[in-house]
Length: 407
Image (spheres, rainbow, N blue to C red):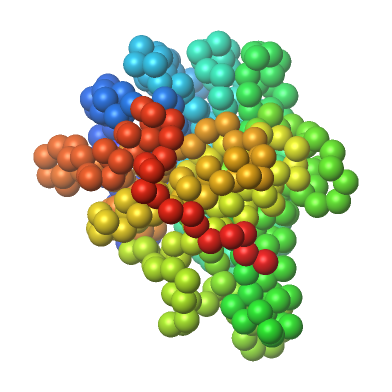
């Protein structure tokens, strides 16, 4: 969203022509943040999530950029001036180019290098921020970079490397958690977990059920295991989490097909019946509001508050966007009221249309669209609906209940 990120692995991949889409200046949020925060304030928003760009802050290993850290300090203070609570992410997919050249997250000392960055940020910004997210969607980073091979470093099918990277990122979160609390005892620290609701494509097929269980283990449990936490079993408080960020977008139906590893893990099903209980977004993610309630119940076993740090839809159908928001907020309300689960916040993804990684600019998530040429912010109808919810802290009376928690 910031634009102009040229010192990280994505910038290097763009310059080498390895990506179908180039971020360029994106939506120029780096320069236009005050205008964007004015927009959020006018809509009654109470919080705003932002990410720090590690490669801006440490463009060369061990060398800090005072201008970059001063910029982020100004950004955080601009939010405070507008009564918007900053929710700050330390790592959001991108890595400094120097870090990747030296082996990136495959190296054991990657944990120490990330810790050095976190320690510096806390020295500079620690007292300014209460809510910290150490890493955004580590399992997505691992799967896209080392299994599917669609993101830097473009490695395909390297499960042993994927496991090593996942472990190092989990240990980096634990180290960051400790460092943040050393600098700011009152901080609240978590990470943003991509949490699809995983189900078998054909519930009557044993191999589909097994594949769904294994996929769920990889996507929704493995990272917690590397941290030393468990989702199921005895209900003990999660170590190194003050809250868990939940990024929920969709249900994933898993279908077994073929033999060997492919049969065991299955694949996401995109056949026609995939839409039997919902519709698809522009990037083929199934709209499934009941999955949000199911996911929140699933992770309530960790024993920490939950924070919905991303929830949104990529679409150009504005009636669908509004329906998505209404039904997911209803699912959230029912989770809080009927299931008695502690949810401390909800952040829609996203304020603006922005660069969506391998999807480029075609995935339109924003409450405001952004003109590709003029960079003008144009509010969408759904922004008014969300503004009503933010100001009243309640749902419109005409919104109906969603489906019950799926089995």
